[in-house]
Length: 49
Image (cartoon, rainbow, N blue to C red; front, side, top):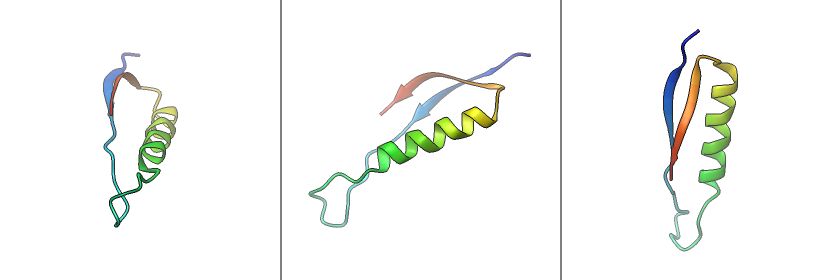
């Protein structure tokens, strides 16, 4: 079976005060990895932060 090649893209978000980095990058990576685990026809070939 051929796989779709994909790039994982995450972006930084800040809290309302804009002085503390939220944990959104970690959460986004976790969501992407969980999605890819459930879809064996997708292969992450690169990550963009």
